[in-house]
Image (cartoon, rainbow over all chains, first blue to last red; front, side, top):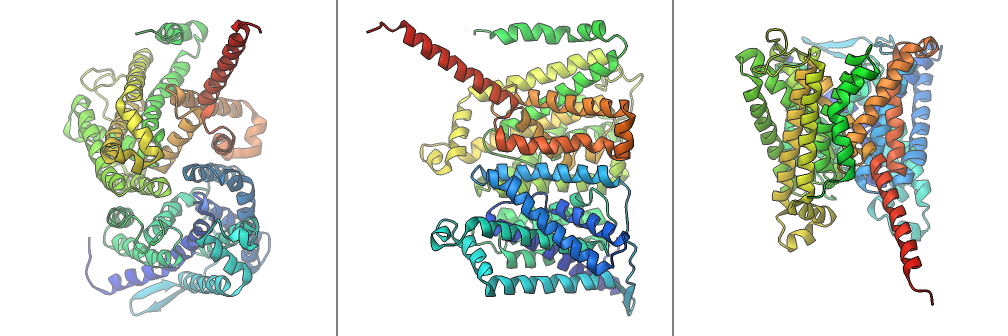
Length: 289
Length: 351
């Protein structure tokens, strides 16, 4: 254990910040869906995994990376709509826990399908962006790009929700589910659009993650629990809360991981999460519960 | 007490099952016994989970309790030479303490539904990460084995794995204890209190139910059962790994099996265990026997059972939330009601 306030500590802190961008993006999609449809997609990280495979094979098939990434975003947006139409809609009126478990079934299906279709090997897209070195610290460009794109996507989503008709309808539905259909808003369409946006955000996250991580069918289990934790910590459905929570959690992981071992970084983050929930069950910034 | 007809037929069959297996499948006796033992041990764990699940306390954290049960016992045995006869009670205590530490704030602050599920999910992950992190003792993600004592069969070390028939009876006894606990809970006042609380907590506490205490009681029982189940499973498998006995995968499997079998009936979790084990074993045998399937899916063929699990889980929740046994029993009840109504109508004097 070497936990001194030296340059490596600063490097860990800054890398934590860069990781936070990605986690915030992942949490954003889940929070949007929860806030509007009141459903937790337990399989969210698995959608990201499918997107990563889609981008990997599109790139392998000769598409330039940006095109492959666009294909991934569209693919997962469609997947989100399919998921909503065939799985979520039939259980919209049953107990909340059933909605959560039904997407647990989707998690199994996606993971198994990926294992069967792509095998259990780790795959890497093989794009190296190099790294930016300053003083004794090194930051990979992949992480910096990820951070920038994630922040950009969040700003765009915010503008969309503020400025467009459908964006305003989405926010309105999130505030009052009963009254909006009476105001002439087609609830089913809003749900479908929300699912598509949530899926699209997962696809975007996938495009950023293929630059940093190896792809394998179980990668969702590595990120899934983290994303849920961030969403709950920020208050489920609270997008700004999720954003801040992503930074807190990723600092725990990055600093804890550099001081001890990687698992301990995660373990400390989970412990911190449970403590916070016991003090503030509605999350750090949650108003609505 | 009136003994139901199913028990009169079922108990002798279960007791004689090893003989039956020896007679019917002399070549594959060990394999079929192995299947039965797996079903019984998991049934016990599933029954433990269903005690909470039936009252709306959907925990995704029971992988933590099976993991604690298995690891505490094995580590005590491997590093301190403590016999499992002491190790299992210690593991149960640890697991109950963890359950209460997490449960008390949850129930006190009324964390329910999504939040409860996600919080318990964090608990599972935390325990799994701790197991991996303590790799100097636990063997990390590769897992570890309980140290073999003598020839592997010992009362002192509670090891019985080489003798499948003995293992079967131990598993059977464990399973019976599980059903007894379920029955006691079902008949107790606590059940009505918890049923009321799961419907409306305010109303329940207004009639004098201490909701937090009742929930804590059931959580402690449930966690203790899972810890014992995990420990016995470790002794039978003679191997434990963070993914096989702890972690999110185990938690989700528990939830799925119970939902498939039926959460609200006594033998529901058992039916769930039979269903999942037979399904995955059947698929495994089919795939291994068929070169076409193997060549189509390659290494991934073994994921086919997970795929079918997932699809079934979705279908069960949408179309059959009461599970296999629950739906069957409900259907029988309805039929009986109809028959009774017809009889009443016939018995009534015609005008």
